[in-house]
Amino acid sequence: MRDPAAPVVGVRGLRMRYGSNDVLHGVDFEAYRGEVVGLLGPNGAGKTTTIEILEGFRMRSAGEVSVLGVDPAHGGEDWRARLGVVLQSWRDHGKWRVRELLAHLGRYYAPYSTPAMPRPWDADELIEAVGLTEHAHKKLKQLSGGQRRRLDVAIGIVGRPELLFLDEPTAGFDPEARREFHDLVHRLSDELDTTILLTTHDLDEAEKLADRILILNGGRIIADGSADALSRQISGEAEVRWSMGGQRFVHSTTEATKYVYDLFKQHGEAVADLEVRRASLEDTYMTLVHRAEAGGETELGLQEAGAR
Amino acid sequence: MNAKTAALRSGLTRGWIEFKQTWTNRDDVVGQFVFVALFLGTLFFMRNATLPGTGFSLGAATVPGVLGAGIVFNGLNSAAGYLAIDREDGTLLRAKATPNGMLGYLVGKTTALAMAQVTGILLVLVPCLFLFSELAPDGVWSFLNLLWVLALGLVATLPLGAALGSLTNSPRSIALITLPIMGLGAISGIFYPITALPGWVQDIAQVFPMYWLGLGMRSALLPDGAVIVEIGQSWRPLPTLAVLVGWSVIGLALAPVLLRRMARREAGSSVAERREKAMQRVG
Image 1 (cartoon, chains in turn yellow, purple):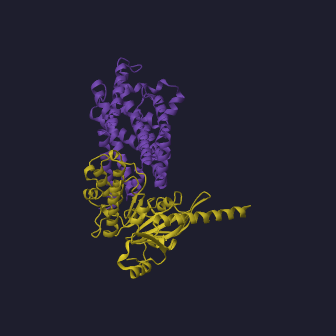
Image 2 (cartoon, helix red, strand yellow; image 1 turned 30 degrees about the horizontal axis):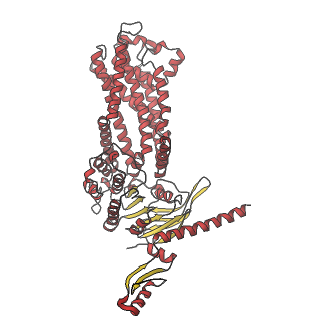
């Protein structure tokens, strides 16, 4: 499925500087069609800046950026029609009604409809997909936080975008709404081949949704890979737990599969309660961020020493 | 359908929806009627006063002036205010994230404001036509005259209001626009003939559109006899046209530049930042 010749998002050597303060120091990554990419990182790491540059809302200081084959700094309205944007803090259109607003905003996408990709998404169908049918005629200011968020997502995808930006999409969701939202994201990427770039602080969510994780820290990408690959890369070891004859055992190994095979060969059906656990994304994330911060401090210390 | 045409049509629908919202939103409706009631109440107390040097009712002479001042107030203050609010709550960013959304937004806002101007005028004018038989002596011609003054007033004030609105950074700084407009209301001969004021004040007033819109409205709605209290005892239609066209040109030249500059700076983080500032002020 990967076509390296045509990434949907291509970023090389992206730098951003505000005054004398560097926020991004050469960010490189790519995202491909149908891929869900999770962008993680502590506050102030440069996630929002990166996303805003890709959305065409912010000019970059240096580097090459291509989004759907176009430089976002010069993206026109035709390009805009192929993107969906869900930001953190929408409070707009409080006096409008749910269905009214969704149908209204959808109309701007009608001229970009193609037989393969009819645009916009039918308002009623979309309202049902995000579970707002019974609130379709409510005013936006009467919606709860989670309902409002689901409408924001609906507005983000009303034009059936090829690329969707989701900035902390499930903040304020209850567990059920979160599950439904995850199903919707899977549907978008599987059925419509939408590429999704997602930022979140919920590492569990990132692990569930993202095909690939990018960790941004101090203006640099410090990790790029699937959650599994990252955990193997970082800890290398998996924990094998089992019980035998009423006794519990734990063993750490780099070759869990072989270890389990040997375990069964030796003890057969006596082995019970078998579990193999890799480091979770949370463990991996903490390790990577701490490692990068420790490295960053050293670097800063050297710079200061040099300045003296 | 062409994408720009689609956005234009969406903009018109948007204007109509927002116009309807002001009439289904309790606070907005109450605001409109309170203003009309206050104005009619003022006129009631002025009913025995006459325009100096004539037997003409001062109350009746005030009606067109207030209509003219209302055009300026709505055109500048409301346009700037909506723009500031729409920036703070993210409406503008939403428009920016939608293909041709900015075009739709501007068409919608213009439509909604123009319709609000028309209904605002009707709300004041219709009861006053019953109250003062002197108003609109030329029938249809008076109203046609009123229409061109209104049209000119819209073009002279809305773009200017949008330009001012794109310079402010929060709805709370709109007072910086409201106060000077109030000041203009005091010196522009709205409630009393401008010829009663010192010459240099008259000169200042004549730079700004409010005086001329008041004059234009009076020329449309008052009988010719009322002209004797005006500067030069004339309705001065050509200078009115010239000044209002002048302000239109300034507004239409500035608005696209300033709006584009403002739109370019809109991003998710700027909306979030303003929201945080607003929260701090409340908390």
